[in-house]
Image (cartoon, rainbow, N blue to C red):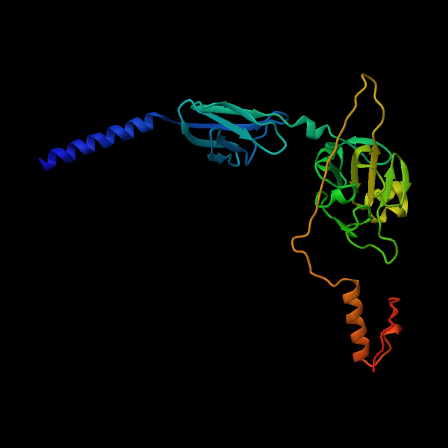
Length: 287
């Protein structure tokens, strides 16, 4: 009787494994680039509905992954357009380069080039990201968005910000050179309306000195403002409100109480209370 139970359990277990195995599919394939045809190393291959189930391509661009039947897989790589397709035993994928990233235009001072053709250290700031911040000064909004740029604010909401690109370069003025629509200036940008800015580029390498001279020794920030465009009239309205409140209210002295404390302090020190520097005049006598 015991042997029959073991046999039935073993048969059920084998049947269950067969059913589970029949519901899975092992796919293998190769990932290459469209422009050069070379294999893409380190491309990510994941099951679309189960992102935790994935793998990456090897040095030859090959991969192997077990997924569920009728599943979809997504192949992606930085700088290339992602591809999603239905799982098949053999998959060969050709990825296209992300044209928007390569065609992004950068202003370098004397010319306009594609970002893909640049060889210098140039950072392009997305104005859409800056618009999400509730910041009056557009230069303060750049903090943490440009590698190698350090921004220090003075705490005033409408105050100026100190910008250092690649650290301190001289004992004198270390501020970067600002180029606004082709006009150079050394003034801060705290008075500039962020809604009027179309693009911001930051030139950080020494090659910028060949364009703007010694004034560009501390870096260059190129700002292009918005201009009128042909077509229908378009009106944008944007409003935001921010509030800050203290957590704990400090119990402080009023005017009379402060005057009493200051009078007592001067008396304790043996000094005349009317010699204080705050302009308090006491008519109280003391021994």
